[in-house]
Image (cartoon, rainbow, N blue to C red; front, side, top):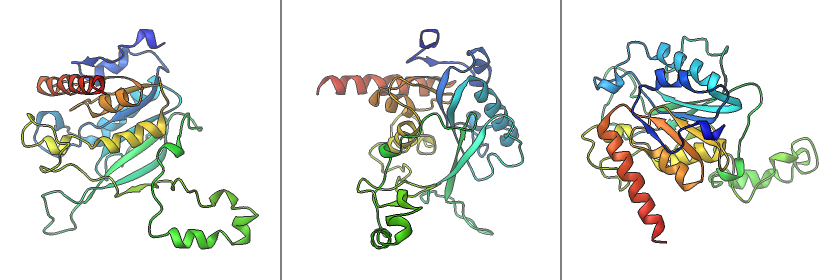
Length: 267
């Protein structure tokens, strides 16, 4: 199946059209950080973001392997008012805490988070590598250790909740990975004033890729943007390909991949 896919290829096409040409059940993981339907940029002009995302979910359900995952980025209402249940199963709505935005509410509360909706195809998850994404035990560590002596934990029903020295499940509220700002060393140049709103931190994409795929799995990114998914997949030996319509972003992705390959050869 891999031989029929354009692995390590940046496709300068509309993903919503291109996805129709892909074979059934050919993708292990989709990471879709596309339009939010919020601003005036060409790439983000969507009349109805819920309808757009429903179409994306429908197309994803056909090309995903059974148990494969889709991570769909958006604002809090990105999948409201649509019936996605006929296509994929919503496993989690991850809240990614993003407090560094410049806009501040004047008549209501400021939105300080993005949603990462995690869907799977079918009832059973194909891959979830918890040990690859554990995070440090923090404020609740003392309480967790104290609970070790509770009989139902120590010897009974809840034994699987025992403290793990490698860390805990990150849960569905992520405040440990910071969004990029103008001062972030990771922020790329050459994209203009909106780059920090497009480029996601590598650590964020790493968590998704490591959790929901294995080495040599196929990862598809319908909105490659600045190529973070491609870089992460290269680092962790996943097979990737994706779509990007804007030529300036394609240039950034190509340079980023070239720089990464040059750096890795030095070590």
